[in-house]
Image 1 (tube, rainbow, N blue to C red):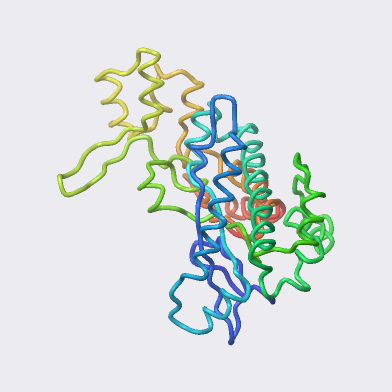
Image 2 (cartoon, rainbow, N blue to C red; image 1 turned 30 degrees about the horizontal axis):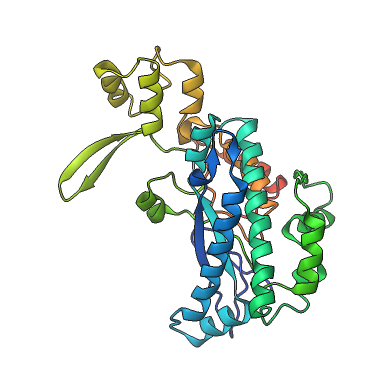
Length: 326
């Protein structure tokens, strides 16, 4: 398609734009929290959801209203879509996995591998039904190069300056052959958007973000009211710790559970908030997701006491781990 000159404001879209074409990407997000059980990821339900989502996003391309002809031309020629996730933190709560843990990194890897596999598979099914996108010939897809395969291309260009996990669990070889023979309906399939508004409507955590605060104030036409993390409340009630003193402590510490002595250490780890989680964990989880994404992810990094050295080290880590954007 051409060089990617820039990303969008939220840094999850990496599409080519030139004088004749203005890139447009139609976004959708899977509520990951609705696809986990006590036993882990519900892959069968996720597959059904992703298949439906990809069909809907492909329909949007045809039914969309385009303000300028360059956008219409680009979208109909390449048909890019960006399917991502929201509710990642909620899913971790339900699985009892702290964000700052290797288990969370592994879950980020597993969940995105399945979503990527099903999204690419769905696009090949749509290509079989509706036809390939116009610029498929000569693309990475046509050569059997999937997102996971692009790591080797990046490593070849960088030398030793790339340290990405390349493990996989699904039958990618069979899917790779199907992509080459049947084709793809969409030039791009995945992008993780911030989901600030839609996650609020659904009632789950934003995108791949850690919980910003366990206690916050919401406003509507009826006035202001205090909201406490419902998962935290349930755990405190189960342990007999939810009382008026605890409510006042949470208010006093702005929702942080770290300074409250009577809260067990395992709950302190599980309910650590964004600025209490070492940002390197966000980079590590982001790296595992990136190997399955054909675009990028809107990834915020939180530092309670930032300085130049910390920022330099963190962004060097992100670069070495193969992140496209943060």
